[in-house]
Image 1 (cartoon, rainbow, N blue to C red):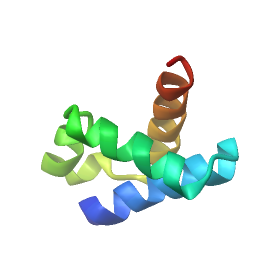
Image 2 (image 1 turned 90 degrees about the horizontal axis):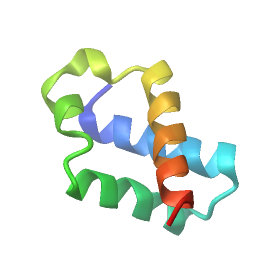
Image 3 (image 1 turned 60 degrees about the vertical axis):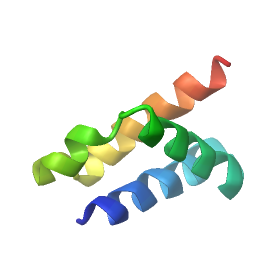
Length: 67
């Protein structure tokens, strides 16, 4: 999947798995992107898998829920 599709997938998984609003999930992903979390994903297409999207969704939700 493309980088943009990957970010969309991570966002969707956060909404579906953790019952966050679209806006809250988007904020988690945008904030992570701004901090460079997804740089490697942009550079390495092999990182953009559905399994990895589930892992990233979980990691971002956990990081966001500790604030």
